Length: 473
Ligand SMILES: *Cc1c(COP(=O)(O)O)cnc(C)c1O
Figure 1 (cartoon, rainbow, N blue to C red):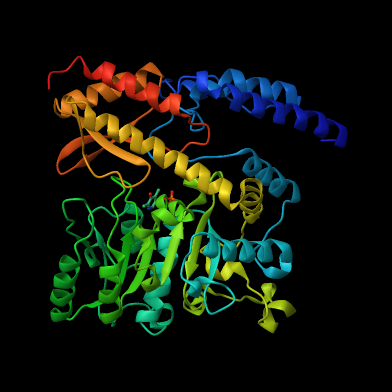
Figure 2: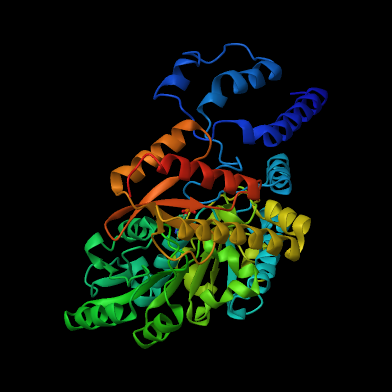
């Protein structure tokens, strides 16, 4: 693509994205295509000759758009927010333009140093333990996802618990390692346990209380039983803001237990971590000083498009020992000097994108106060929605709503809730998903998209009430 053509096509694409964002509100949120429909509209073979960018972009509209579920719609209340923003999109574009591989400091010093710097900023912005700062023994790194972060934490913990033997001789012959999480922990914990070779049977998914938070007594009881059975407890994944209901595990009570039993404490705050930007929401984070590692996803609720997951460790050497490999072809003076971070040693893959750019753009565009304002806005919208649910005798809350997720249900039972959700999602007016809490279906209203305004939430609640009227309480 020649420079002039690139400019013309690039401006056209930026115009396309701007128009998309401006008009996304009027599109049906959930794609209604049937399986196979998109492929059927694509030619069976790739073109033998190159095509014009205009033709390609026209097919984005014609072929692909019907199969897009509009995550950036202000009426998107499903799963979790995956919010994006102008500065973040531009950061991604620049990252693609530079096309940098950031595996080593030496392969692009700015890629590593900007990342280290912005992650240090975030320690202050979220008021995280200063032990996570890169200026001491800790440090932060951008992972692709919270799933990768919990796997890295588990591998570092495994190495620490086996004094390095896991990497060298393997796990055979060692006491069996046991990991812990609540029954509400994200499935990524179970996946990490499987990948790390511990075996699913060595993961204890512990009992939660009436607000779906891990019971410290349940952990303590299980630790005793496992020790008595000759097993070696080594890892707890606590969650701040569970995926299902936004439950907050009590870190201040779990932390001392972890210390006493030498468990690595990983804190998964994938969505809710962003709330720590605001001092008034930090009470959920009490006990964070016990954490060995922490992770949150700016790609959920901090206006930074996927992928961007900020992972911190208290002792970076534990992580590096677990993941570092140095083949001859990667040797270089900067690495040998020990004066730089080589982030390939902090993650599973070797290669890495310049993700810090978009995060830096976002933080600079909004400023700390701008980000706080947006988070407060979303929490206030969710709290208003929750108040509406409480005030309507046909509905009830299914869990406390500490921040921006409201789990609720119609009092008419599972079938009514399923039907309400299906009808709403099919209408295209909004998109909601569900979970199961204490055996009953609950609808999840997740508020945090960049473009969501009070009228979108008010309209959603009006539509939910409207559909609810068809069912007896
Ligand atoms: C969304 C979520 C995850 C998984 O996030 P990925 O970045 O997609 O791996 C893990 N834990 C919690 C609590 C989440 O909300």
